Length: 99
Image (tube, rainbow, N blue to C red; front, side, top):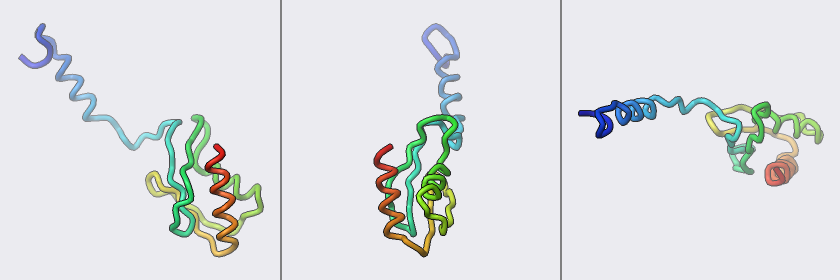
């Protein structure tokens, strides 16, 4: 008989639930790998349910970096820039490591 030794279906149900878990759902403790022009600069950990990875953009804007494009690809956050690339990478590394 499937399930536990008492004839229950618990074991079968637990297997069914675990195989149908939606892995695309983002949780508040997710992290993103951040890249600038294809180079890995660090990981952005989301610390609250209200925070998302676009807070990286807010940080950059608040520090005078406005000439960049960004996009999300799964758990990778890509930033493309043609201006001040080195400085932008350094600022992001400090930001990502201090959080």
